[in-house]
Image (cartoon, rainbow over all chains, first blue to last red; front, side, top):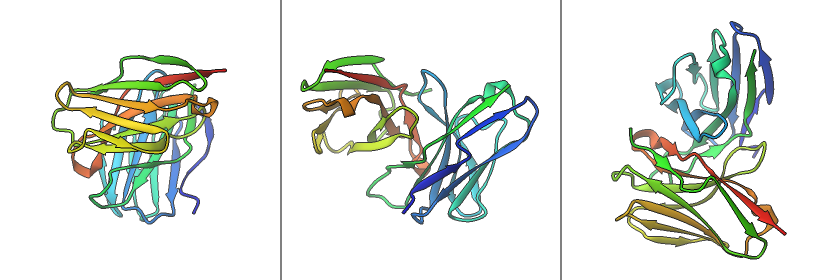
Length: 114
Length: 112
């Protein structure tokens, strides 16, 4: 199993440009999450999904959109990038169940908006 | 809003010593807590978890202690090794969809 993978690993955008970050997991997990991590701060939840075709807002959803058309993929879109969106973005997933709430993380995408 | 926080931003320990990383949480309704380790340039990696019906849980070289009375969580690493150098985050389950709230992190530096 590859676990959780993210593409691209790095990206530089100009203000106003758009892009999509791809998260893929091969563990058949129902739940998927997008976080951003800024220097000196913990991870903050942007959007999440509890299953294929469903998405919901997290703590900092403004300026982002998501889609979960396939169970294994969770896309994060920036329609008009702003310098405030410069950050490291992490995707995570976890299976549905009650024994554990542990989330499994991808390696991250480092995004710079100029 | 309620959040998870950490007392020490950086902890420096000598190789072979024990490390203790602390975390304070404020949501009394949280029933599940996790410690993650994040090495430079990588995503967070699960270390150990604990539910609120327990006050101690042990893993391989790691122990998590939970004190619900004072809303305090700690991670103890025995015989700290250079490979333990990383940023450690505590996180709490905030309810529906297993959303996690993360603390700001503590950097553990292991000196030889």
